[in-house]
Amino acid sequence: MYKLTVTRGNKANTTVLPEFMLDHLNLKEGDTITIIPTANGYLLTSNSEEVEEQIKLGLEFMNDYNETFQELAE
Image 1 (cartoon, helix red, strand yellow):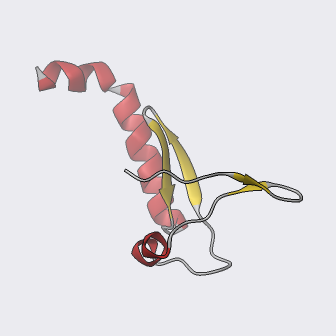
Image 2: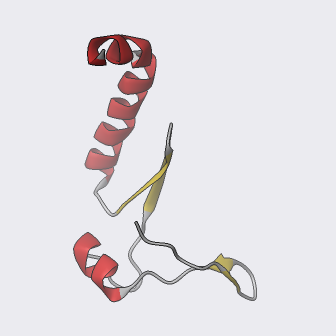
């Protein structure tokens, strides 16, 4: 787990991702990060639109069948 500090900028609040996170996500200055709401918080990803859509559909599926998954886990 990593904690990042939010700081106030001129027009927006910002946070700085450590270099190892940028490397892991294959991000460089100017790239876009997609933030997807989940039941447990948010998912940050640098994936393509196709992968983002797959993740969104998968999360919707898991939310729709949450009770079923919980029963199966017992």
